[in-house]
Length: 193
Ligand code: URA
Image (cartoon, rainbow, N blue to C red; front, side, top):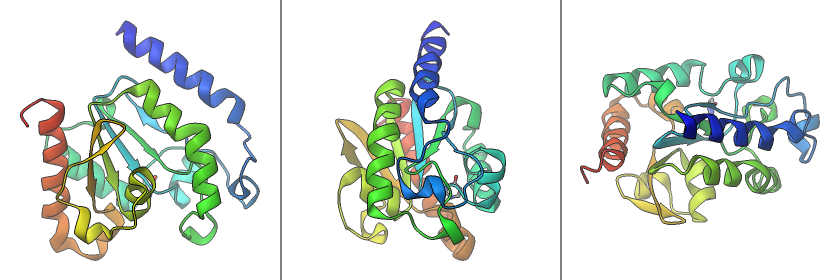
C-alpha cells in the first residue's frame, strides 16, 4: 500500500506541471481534458493505447467509450479488473476528428509523460493496444498483424503487442486473439511464463 501511495504521489507530481499542457499542437486543437491515465499506480500490468477519443476527452478517463467497454469486458472475462492495472495512452490529448497522433505529438508526449509514467509504475508487463502504441514503444514499423502473438521487450520489461479494441469492434472474430494476448500478459505478471 505504501508503495502505491508513493507511486501515486510521483505520478501526481509528474502530471502537475502539464495540467494545461500546450507542449505539442494537440494542446491547442480542441481538446477538453488531458487524459493522463488511471488505475493502480503500482500495477503489475500496464496497458497503453493510442490516444483519447470523444468520450475519454469529455470525462478525462482512458478507454471508456465503445472500444473501452469492449476492453473492460475482455479484461473482466480473465478476472483482470481495471482498478488493479494501469491504463494510459501514448498521447494524452484527443487528436482532432480521431485522426492518429502525428510523429511530433507522440515524440513530445511520450518523452514528457509516458516514459516517466512507465519508470514510476515499473510494471512487470506492458501490453500495447494497436499499431500506434506498439510502433512507438518498440520503435518499429512492423505491422500489428505480424507482431501480435509475440513477446517483445521495452527496456527489459516484457511487452505484448496486441490489437486495438477498436479493431476488434470492426473485426469481432479477432476478439479471441486480444483475449489470448491479455492472458499471456497475465501469465507473465503472475510468473506462469
Ligand atoms: N482509444 C485509445 O487508443 N485510447 C482511449 O483511451 C480510447 C480509445
